[in-house]
Amino acid sequence: MGLGELIRSPYLWEQLRQASGETLAMTFISLALAEVIGIPIGVWLTLSRPGHLRAHPAVYQVLGTIVNVGRSLPFIILMVAIIPFTRWVVGTSIGTWAAIVPLTVAAIPFVARLVETSLNEVEWGVIEAAQAMGASLLQIVWRVLLREARPGLVAGATITAINLIGYSAMAGAIGGGGLGDLAIRYGYQRFQPAVMLVTLVVLVVVVQGIQFTGDVLVRRLDHRG
Figure 1: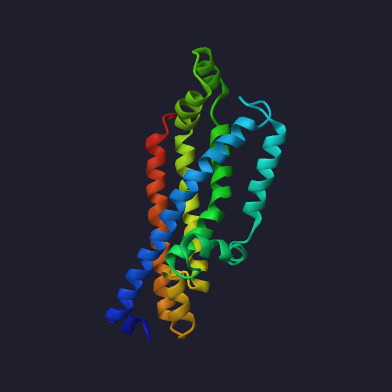
Figure 2 (figure 1 turned 45 degrees about the horizontal axis):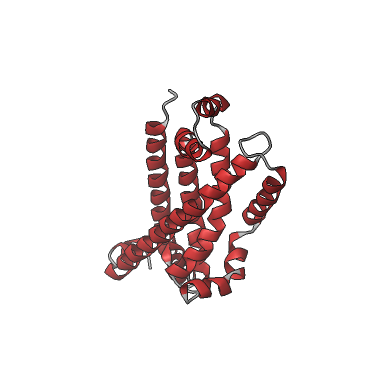
């Protein structure tokens, strides 16, 4: 099928619309779950690192090692390795909801490190000022660390979302749905390069849209200049 025929094919455009929705669902649901779990881990990493508010080198080392191991696993291997866990969580290992499980697991350590990096950029003088005013640890975390690090946190979430789009395309290799699945089933297995091209264009547009939105939010939240 050529590009012209593809453009005139309502069926394939419907498939493309559905696949785009699945990719966005996988990306943003996984991102939300990873942020909910990864942000507390990143905060814990920050607080327990040597010289910080609740310094505990042993805890920092153990937690940091776990996070590093999670980040070092190739996604395609992780996705296959946790199939039993995926079945236990969602009842199946195929489809969009099944893909969300490994996507979330893969993103959690990534989010944790990005959160730690953002929180470490908060000036120590601001933290000391909060301590001098009698702020509790929870208040410092919520009103100082997380508040001051908002631009970095949004930038990190943007990077994570873009990575998840790439991971979601790989999930199509084992029936995860989305644009990756469409590209494999129609573009590769049925030898239709036009489908592959259109899928690639859609992915590029989605990534550019996410990056643009993230950049706008970072500029609005950054009060330093």
